[in-house]
Image 1 (cartoon, rainbow, N blue to C red):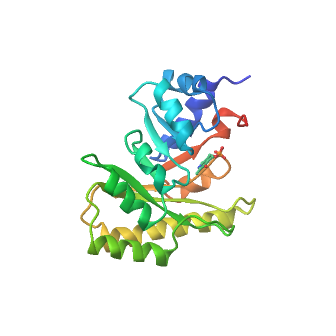
Image 2: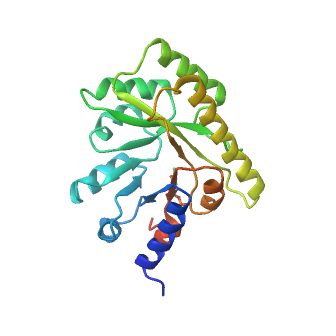
Length: 222
Ligand SMILES: *Cc1c(COP(=O)(O)O)cnc(C)c1O
């Protein structure tokens, strides 16, 4: 059987050769799994629930870079801020304002999450709502929240051309935002796209952060 270490090394080499970084999605996996990857030198881990993140944070080394990848309710924003290095799920102006208000003197890095899939979803910006958000931020700047890129999830389908098209759209949105609002901002660099089933396509479309769970760690325990 292939060990986690062989598996991890092959996957991280593949991702690094495209110039992207791996976020190991450890939701529902026990802290021992995270520790194994930590021992191999990995530091970027993704969680999608606040309570689970808090619990794991307390038990694990403090030099882990935690990525929050799930929908974040505004009333939980303050709990997440001190723990995470990047919030991938910045999906509304109200959430960004709340994060800004709760960040005190710290800086909170956030990605704008776009809805690029054909499946219905309550979450994620469209080009239009994203533009409105950015216009509002231009009028009334954020002081502690720093927008550093975009995130999106493709449709769950075997149709690779469709998935490629959706990732291409996200890359285009990134480029439009960069030109319109972040030309002078060297921090706006990230395109978080690609999961276990579609990360090779995402890498081809210019992903900088892939979020991989099951392909690295196997089926998630429930
Ligand atoms: C669970 C999850 C992932 C990882 O999914 P896998 O298919 O296990 O790789 C990536 N991104 C988000 C937002 C997730 O919720």
